[in-house]
Length: 88
Image 1 (cartoon, rainbow, N blue to C red):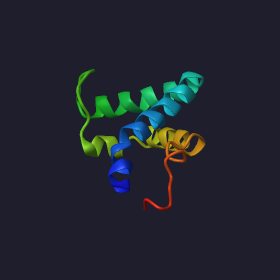
Image 2 (image 1 turned 60 degrees about the horizontal axis):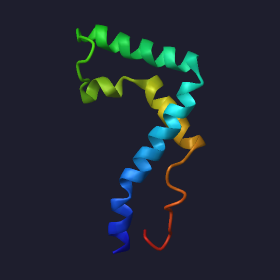
Image 3 (image 1 turned 90 degrees about the vertical axis):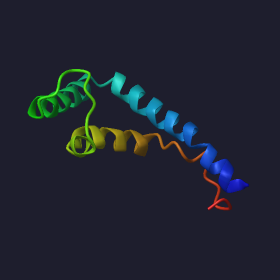
Image 4 (image 1 turned 180 degrees about the horizontal axis):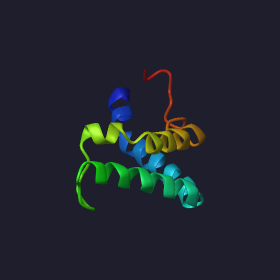
């Protein structure tokens, strides 16, 4: 039962991670521009239009975006409130 509860809480951790990321991003215009530049570079390189979705391989090339998300999760980890050693 506890594992089911932990799995069902993934929406909480996802929303927490995204909230932390966008909160940090909102106060860092230089990071916003760097991410936009990276997205634009990958979009143009692959001949995509604005609004097109990215493939998994294209997402793998988004190193700056990955670093920004990882740093946000390091600063504001979404899991501590749910971490229970008994569950895992």
